[in-house]
Length: 161
Image 1: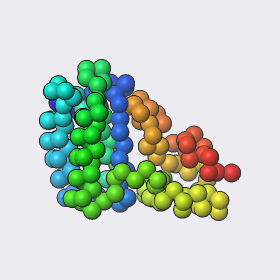
Image 2: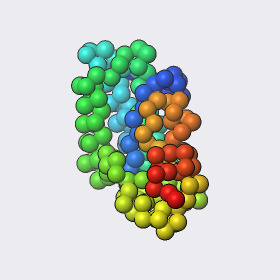
Image 3: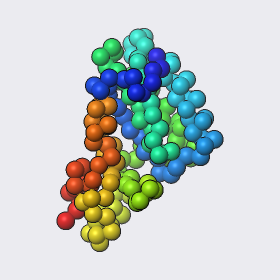
């Protein structure tokens, strides 16, 4: 069952998929329509899942699930991953590669392979105060508090001097 992301409890589980580029307005409309359709039919052992989504900065798909009502199962998680893989193919975009880093450069969101981000940290092109996106957050509360944070407050800190 599709619900508004804002209406999900703070304990809702979240999965964040970052794109290696920004989506166009037309792509965003198409993706939203497809997310609506996917979530409406998303189930776990035949039970509806109460889920919602946000798309941030035209490049992050945040999928949230109210696990107070029904938990995701292996099959339902597999279904969501297959859905994301289909988006990757249809829009020629990378959404599942966790070895990349997104961070803010002023008002813009930059996207770099982890190897390049480490090199930039060594060269001090990014600092402990650079705003990064911590896509490892697991709940809506963590997403709201710890997703967009200075690198020093994230797993990215290990690469900074």
